[in-house]
Image (cartoon, rainbow, N blue to C red):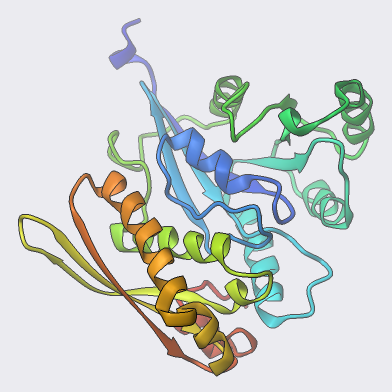
Length: 302
């Protein structure tokens, strides 16, 4: 039967895991472009981001979720945990990402959530390239296999793209028959403005200290295409006045470095010359207030 005559399959698969296991890096590699901020720092992901992979008659819709952190005392962290759990109710399968050689409290909590569901779960053991002693991998796989009745186990490196293609084949096999939900050339349901804000936020995460980046949010306020360049204006929101001076930096050096790094990446993303203007504004305590969290565009589950 010709490929165009084959029955189509289409469905949703959630990518879940504790913070900093490489979920967003995996999503970006699978779709072939950056659609989500990816950082070495935990709880980078704040939104449910859909990435679309179309292979002939099959369309796989991947849903990236915030990292699950059961120990978080902050309201924003609790909101992100609820978002991740709620996502599991609306998908056809789950990718459970863990870090090779490490099993922590967040992994255990997620395994409990997944055991209570009926959806097939594929275990992805990520960062196998980071293991200094490769001999620990097989015993670790045997240990984790006993946590849940997994549909399959796929060791890989999302950062290097090692063994990622077999994962796609495995996930497509989980999809139900049905028409494509997105155009075949679409890779995400998120707007270009959202993707721009993620690029800027990623620069903040990489360049600032341990605490300040988590008090920031980015909102693209202006967008003008003049034909020769795209002029973008974005606000970086912070929670405290002291954080504002840190983001700006001495003599404006930090915000200039963030802007330069983001602009270079945006020109690759948009394939156009980009003129980027950033400024910093204060919204006190937004992470501890439901309305403040909503104003930042973050989903709030009941």
